Structure formats: C-alpha cells, structure tokens
Image 1: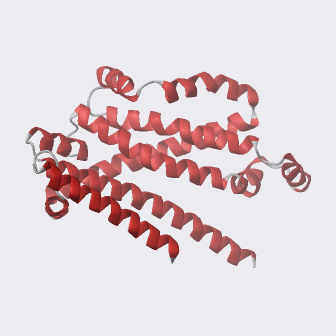
Image 2: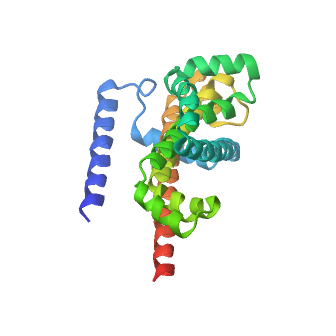
Image 3: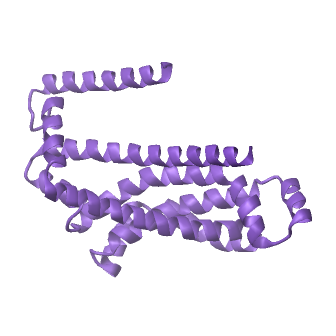
Length: 250
C-alpha cells in the first residue's frame, strides 16, 4: 500500500509543479498547461491516423528488439563460454556503446537510406545491452553448478535449456527492460530525423513545425506510457513464468 501511495504522491507533485510553471510562464505556446495536453492526448488516441502511426512505430520496435534479443542471446552465450570470441567481440561492442547516436544515425541515413535506418539504429543500440548482459551472466554462473549438471547430463542443448538459461534469466529480464526504454528513445529520434512516413517521429516533427506544442507534450506523454507498459508487460510475464514453474515443480 505504501509504494502505490508514494508513486501517486510523486506524480501529483510533478503535476503540481507543471501547473504552477505553466501559470508563471503564462504562454501556452511556450509551456502548455496540463489540461491542454490531456485534451491533445485524447485527440491523438481517438484519431485513426495517429493510432496507425503508433502501431507502425511499435511494430518497428518489436521487430528490432526481437532480432537484437536473438543475436544478443546467441553471441552473448558464445562469448561467455568462449573467452576468445568474447575478446573478438569486445571492440565492436565498445564502439557501438560509445559512438554518439546522432553520428550513427547520420551515417546510416547516407548508407542505407531513410526507410531502413530506424530499424538498424534501434538494433545497434539495443544489441550491446543484451549481448553484454548475457555474456556477463554466463561468466558469473557458479562453475560448481555447471559441473554438477555436466556430471548428470553433458549434452549442450539440454544444458542450455535446463542449466544456463534458467541461471541467467534475471540478466535477460534486466537487459530486456533496459532495451525497451532505450529502444523507444532511439527509434523515435531516428524516425524524426529520417522523416519516416506513418510513425510517431514524423507526427512529432509535424506538430513541432506547426507550433502545436501541446501535441508535442502529448506525444511525449504517450511515449512515456508506452515505455511503462512495455516494462510492466515484461515484468509480469517473467513473474508469471516463475509462478508456473514453481507450480509445476511442486
């Protein structure tokens, strides 16, 4: 009961500051008030074109995350089990984690064009997180647990299913949660810069050039809600899997 109350109090405090700041500025063009933004949100979620843009962006995000998860899982496990491969991948992953996002976006726009860039940049930003989490998770597994399993069953794929994956499930969940938030940010920026048709990034650009800042705030609020929804779904799915596994074991 205490945690939900603190959450509501925090949101109310932020809402109060926003309302006071809007009244002090006294210019809805510079800082729209909460009521204007709520009205804009309602207008957005009841418009078919806006819903289509949201659906298209979410589809791009899910596709990029799925590819990053598969490759990150496979390559991360290989790097965790084979140190030489981990050393080979280290410079590549370090470059992807340190190069400014805007630089990669510009390069990709030149090389791959406007339609493919949002997918590629989102994948490139998410992949290092998942790869590193999986690789570190494999390396941090208690070797005694692995040795015990190998004494009973030394097959790689069964070991992968019943030993390695269960022991690194927390690393996978953490990486996926971080990827969801980062993926949305990067994808929207790529859509904005590349002017991807039927996308949230494109809608943001149009609202900005038309000086509809209440709609810019509204789209930002919707993106925050989408990120929260993704994290909630992932956490609940992970908890449901744990409960089902516990019921099966008992």
